[in-house]
Image 1 (cartoon, rainbow, N blue to C red):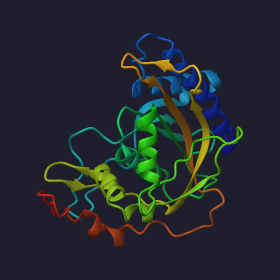
Image 2: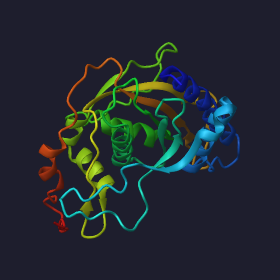
Image 3: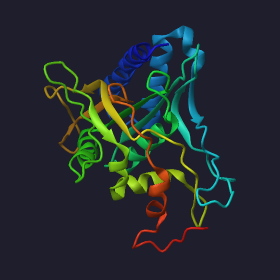
Image 4: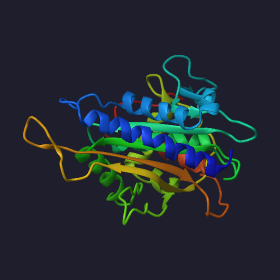
Amino acid sequence: MTTTDYKEWMQRAFLKVEAALSEELITPASLCMTEDHIRSALVRGLAAAMPTHAHRIDTEKTVSWTNNPCWLGTNRVPEQGRPIQHDVFIAPHDGDNGLACEVKWLKNEKAGEVLKDIWKLVLSRGIASEGSAMRIYFLLGGEGEHFRATINALYHHTPRMADLSWQRTDQALPNPKRLTMANLLGTAKGKNAVRDLLKWGSPPTYRTPPSCRNEFYTDTRATWRRPLDGQIKKKDGGVLVWNAALWEITAWGLSTRPALNWTAKRDAMLAPSPDSKSTVRR
């Protein structure tokens, strides 16, 4: 399958996410929208949009680098605990490298968790050329104020961490926005997100991260926002607003650049925070 095939497949599957959101809005309580629910809607949408490829769809797929040995050279590997997994996965087919998608439904502001998912995706994608790389997508939805607070926390940080543009203009989707992983590592939230992703055990030990590109674009592929007119009123007198958007993280249009230099970043990354009492096992 080509990258365009995957894009169209994901955009068609997003229609099922929109349907799930709309269906929950008409219920009296409107309380059933959860991360599992929106992920299930995406999976059902993928299967319905391309039934002949439904057997390729998987959930909670373990990433290939989950058992990478200790970054600090002890030769230890993760022995216990849950492996690192992608929420939705489409297996490779006919020479392509498949697709991975992370899913979040926000009931609170969770910028750090969103960054962790972004790191997970780019590490799984690796340094392959864009034409042969695994496609990586991110589906984010949530209650309006928490959805916007999360995106604003990423955008308005200095330096900017990620630009997850989602609002349409005259029915046009936003233009792709640059995402630089080295810049992300230069922020406390960005560094903590990848540290949390790589660590296991107590005191913490860290997996060796796989090589990955340094620069990407976040490209908005689909958005849904309930119209302002006719909003559903909540029991507390407020109104219910839900948002959802789908992005692809891609390197199309970017020239070939060096991979992220993990060696130069390691010591600073793994140094305990000044307010942390934990120690790093060497």
